[in-house]
Length: 471
Image 1: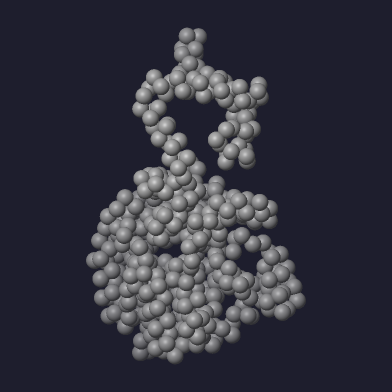
Image 2: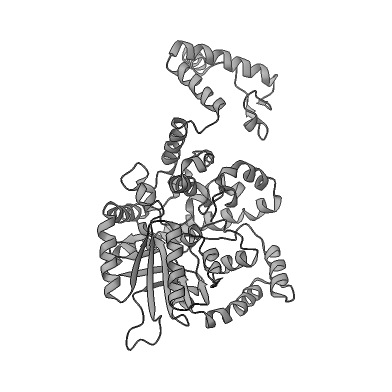
């Protein structure tokens, strides 16, 4: 997927002006936010479960090479082939080579954000292999001119029922339906022939389990079974190397958090643990099974100040609760991963110079850290990226000059107090006796869209001194 993060400001402005999108994004708070709040109450010890999940995830990341080698050995013993890809492009090439080796003409896919990193559909099409998305949301986007997903869990959350109804009628050449059960049945009818005629199934992997050599796939639609068990003779798993968990017990712990944080469910409708290809006596399953484990910049985070990001379990809770994402949606971020987690991952994977505005795409309110099931300190990581940008002179000159002037004054208390007294009195004059300031010099980015509360005309120190005197 081509990186477009350098156009964040332009894209965000358009999304803010899109009233239909604003209405559609309300689904985040009415479904995911409230659903999570209710679901976590079911756990006897939510904080204890979070701490246990963090320990298990970090145990894997701190010894990533060991657990990957253990996984490789056990998966190979089960009859699967494990391949490692240094880059997303290498991973796409490996999947295409697997398809060519087995004479594949059609590949059915479950939802996978890693495959978006790989631009896998484009690579398959270029090789003469037809990719078919089978997750309902991803299918909708694919038939809508291969539109990119806007959310890692609910890829089509930015569209409403009427838009999808129009799309189905146009693409399927059928009468327009507006009843959701009827629309989903229509989608099943369109996808069923692909399920029965595909040569290869491609899935993501929520986790891979080192002790058993298995892949864990979590869905709500059951399409992972159709992509891995029924018709395809080849099953290819594509996932990031950081998704390894040492044991099945570790997986059970993390699963107590993943669906609750993602969709507000106690458990997802389908949880599949797949171990190796079909064996003698098995009634179903693929004849060949491959794992393509993607680095794509992940090892570059190991042992760094951004290492905590690797324990992300891709639940989407940070973006569901983010006041910025709630207003602009996922497409504004310009690459695979949106929201707070994307604002850290994108600069880390593709270079901070290619995503200069993403670390600023946050109020730093801390909500993302509060709701993250594995307590990733996202606000701190965003601040560190901002520091990197300033150090590398990637921010505008006026911004760097302003920060330098503020730092100069902040290091000199007498000067800072004088500047503060002048500033609050000047802002009081700008208010003209009103309670708010509608336009502030050098801060048009704020006051063009919101009013700023007018100060009293006195500094905090002055107000505090007066209060103490009154006492």
